[in-house]
Amino acid sequence: MSIKQNLHNIKSSLPENVKLVAVSKTKPVEDLMEAYNAGQRIFGENKIQEMANKYEQMPKDIQWHMIGHVQRNKVKYMASFVDLVHGVDSFKLLKEIDKQATHSQRQIKCLLQIKIAEEDSKFGMTPEDASSLLSSNEFSELEHIKIVGLMGMATFTNNMIQVENEFNVLKSTFEELKTQHQELEIISMGMSGDYELAIKCGSNMIRVGSSIFGARNYN
Ligand SMILES: *Cc1c(COP(=O)(O)O)cnc(C)c1O
Image (tube, rainbow, N blue to C red; front, side, top):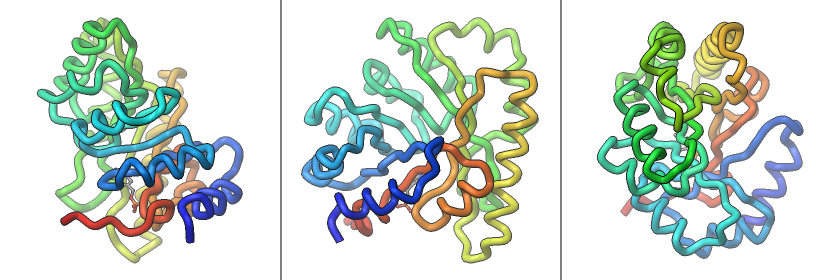
């Protein structure tokens, strides 16, 4: 099926409050343009350099989301244009994003990544760390970043009960933090294999790659 058709099928099944991030990592600009021409405006990449290259080549009304692990020394390459950084997992990183956003005279929106998966390979903070970060003085001094929600990745497993439990942890963490921090709005969870479940568990932003663009080839 075509990218356009895939997009249409997914979009028509989504509740109105759920935003779709089209994860285009490893895919050529032609594929992204096909999605763009079908109306898609939010694209997610997991490598800063690749996102910056695509930003240069693509129309300027696209919202670029950095969904991968962020290396601090590369933040400067996206600070002038990135719309939302999903994978913020330390104050140090937040401080660097604030610094580069200041240089670009912007305010950059961020999500705190919460570790909900069992796997050691997945990054993220504990709910407790996220809570103390949001309440800290040093955080309140950063004027060029805005934390607008949370992001999480479930364990890569066929056990959907486990995935559901992990999504529920993110949702309840969000609800609890929101009582103190009303500016939190976004729960980014759900990918091609589990976004329907994620939406049932309260996601309002899903990150879908292979179901739109087809399987990735990393060679
Ligand atoms: C690659 C990636 C996705 C999309 O994965 P698919 O299974 O292709 O939908 C979502 N989130 C993150 C953080 C990713 O790196």
